[in-house]
Length: 329
Image (cartoon, rainbow, N blue to C red; front, side, top):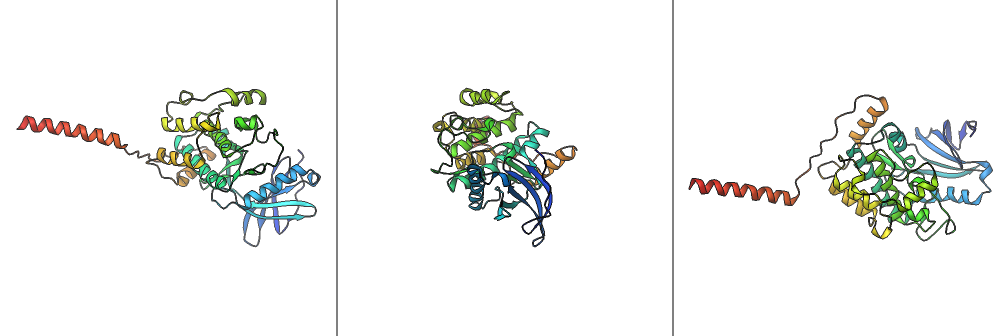
């Protein structure tokens, strides 16, 4: 697509550069002189104003983002019409998309995966509590800023629970990251987002997509029929994480992990011994990846023994002590 000529200003903002173009328009990096900060403005193309579905998608993103207030979700600043064009200003995320990271490092360290999953699940708990469904989770819609914080982007095809924007049977989303119910054109729920995040988690842990083939048809067939089990993961991935991701990837929503909150609580148990805020080590790690310099040491994972292990240890000590006393006396 031909790059648009940069306007000098959009609203009150000074335009710096065009940082993205898509089917709906351009994304401009701008400077807000009143607050001296950088931000992003998404502007819908003039030619698309008459296409009702795309206008609804643009309006839907505004509606969803305006309802959100969470550190792991991009923040919206304003929405206005200017010279016949719709404009949405939002937070500028100074970082890399997860797609960029995976292109550079296909298989991520387990602690990095835990950090990204923790932030994504925290965001989804917030989204789902407000009765929204994202419907287009993929590495390109997840950003990790250079301060080590993960954020969800692009709610353009999100929906409010029980309020479908499209007719039944319409497929919305990115083919390789759809849930089985999305592939079949059925109604989506919060559990559809969990399946998509499960695909992303598998990809981060293994360095490969669990279902992707050379075309969308074969990929969709795999999503519907190919089952993922613990043996599909590298041996270095802890069993608890394998089981969590497999539950997120269950074909039948009724057998899938119950909610983002339940997944978050399971991840909390898995991360026992790791800090929940891994932004500082993740920032250092991402800096090393960007600059192609030696990676920093991983955070120390001080896993505590489970209660049964402590009981077994205590029992063993007791037996040894009893044997010594018996010999001495």
